[in-house]
Length: 379
Image (cartoon, rainbow, N blue to C red; front, top):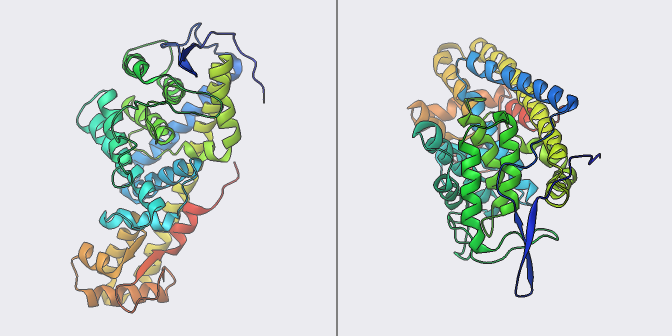
């Protein structure tokens, strides 16, 4: 990987006792980023792919068929970067009834979903700018019901932390650095909004304002800024897809900004992440659309007098691809027995399969839909 870049002073070291803390310079980077020919081309391509994704989102009559699953996918991938592992099926089961899972890792991933939805509501629906309150409230939701209290959910840290070989700024510096970041995010500048989101992510990670959850909140910040700027209307993009796939370079690029001032190298890496994540999301969306149409035809051809209710279930499965019979009965406003008979038909058609061996209220998954979400595309 190339690290050619403009030489910059990125910060200072402050010694307190025996600890040597890195305090980044306030924003924006100086001198400004060098947008060379390769960067401009990458930026144009990234904007083109984002545009295609947004166009698809606006064209599809019921975009909820993607939304829950795509948010769950970003939550899962972002958490996996931090070593938090669970399954997509377990996470999608939570999106139906919002009951917190018992398994710790699954609960952590589900908290990310809640934190992202909470932040989007504050910024897009309630009109809040992306400021300290949004960041802290999102962090509080992220660590809710998973923290023993020592991580101070929603509060900036008062203790030092270590990130690799680096010790981020001391506690008394955090507030001022976050204020500088807020100003960068919310004030007009020379950087286009897409690049701005990538730069803000690096600064947030360098400040590392919390004891835990900084990586997840920092990646959430990217999606939030893209929504705030109007580049995407819904969180269909999952940049953690690329960050996880290229995890070693992700950390190397972050470190290179801190140690060498290589904002240019990070910017190119980040734009590639947007390109690949957009292409991946768009391909999955197209396959899901094809699946939805095929399932509809299959249901209409095989359910006789129950076709109307069966079509309602098929639509419901796009939004909630993991459900129990009780979930289905409640959402279709049908009796348990009616829902069970309908599920039995879907099982015979191999649309659904059981995830457990319970005699009553089994949990089922929409097989082909889950397969599309979990498959690897070659880009």
